[in-house]
Amino acid sequence: MSERGASWVDEALREHEEHTAAEHTAAVDQAAEHGAAEHGTGGRPGSPSDREQQVLDRIDRARRRRPRIREERITMSHGAGGKATHTLIEAVFLDAFRNPLLEPLEDAAQLQVGGARLALTTDSYVVSPLFFPGGNIGDLAVNGTVNDLAVSGATPLYLSAGFVLEEGFPVADLTTIVASMTAAAAAAGVQVVTGDTKVVERGKADGCYINTAGVGVVEHDLAMGAATARPGDVVIVSGPVGDHGVTIMLARGELDIEADLTSDTAPMNGMIAGLLAAVPGVRAMRDATRGGVATILNEVAVAAGVGVVVEENQIPVRAQVRGAAELLGIDPMYVASEGRMVAIVDGEQADRALASLRAHPLGEQAAVIGHITADSPGIVLLKTAFGGTRIVDLLVGDPLPRIC
Image 1 (cartoon, helix red, strand yellow):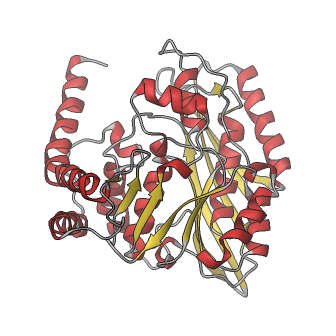
Image 2 (image 1 turned 180 degrees about the horizontal axis):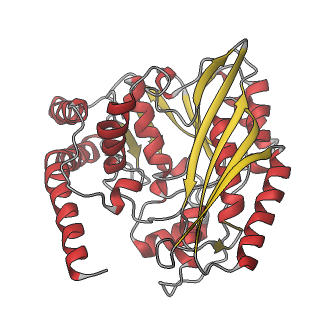
């Protein structure tokens, strides 16, 4: 990147951090400090003191302000799934396209077509590197779109596939990617039925980008979504988190770290279909991609106006992921997975939900990691392994860009 290009990126990042982090993240840190001190002495998580409540109210007011992009140019943080991404979506796209189907901002839109209830989703994949342990951009694209439909409660049926190819990209690599997509579609029970191909000049793309869209049918009467979470519900993750994001980071070869780790990319529609058949009390599901589990829980807390309390010791994380994350200075809760989901389930049906998930190979290590509370609405609290409590907020950007 030229010095001129780098300067406006640095300026945009500095400006965003000054306006957002100064008024918001500082308040979060203050609340976390008081929370750790008071909850660590036996206070009940989710029941803040008067001093903490003042800070939490400040955070809530900041979140409810009309979103506004302060930067003049798009930066990498706008595509990372954190605060900057949410601001971009709400201030530009949602404001322009606002309609009742889009406003829930779920992983797929719910459509009524004739007598059928359909789900529609779309996603673009720009992962770097294109090939990584456990998969490549091709099966990642199929699995990601299948999972977006599945967590929306739909049975995935049909996909589109659009390719943006850079001049000079090896045909052998493209053939391998397409073969992986074919295998992934067969494993998920879907078909690729339409597509598009564009070729751009050398240097205008990173080899290969893929856009996919998916259509599925909703065959049940459940009204699911992040806004339906209620106090007494439990938070379940379907397996160890962070595998994909850390695998991608290590595969780039920029760090002198070796680990026996592969991406968890996989289609979850079979596991999710079993869960929905066994548990009528599923409130919401999200696949834990960009921004990880922490981002999903913040979205649930804000959408439903509830608090979320998570037990750090209950979050399943592989030793290799935890070790690499510590060396990188990142929290596994913010690291992407591509074959894991977060489910919000009626607390009385938690055991049934766990049994269903654990009966499937992808859900063998499913765990309840927290619960929904009426206290501290819009806030995610983490009970740490040291006995304190801290706030888990949205990141401005993402420590691991270009992971999907």
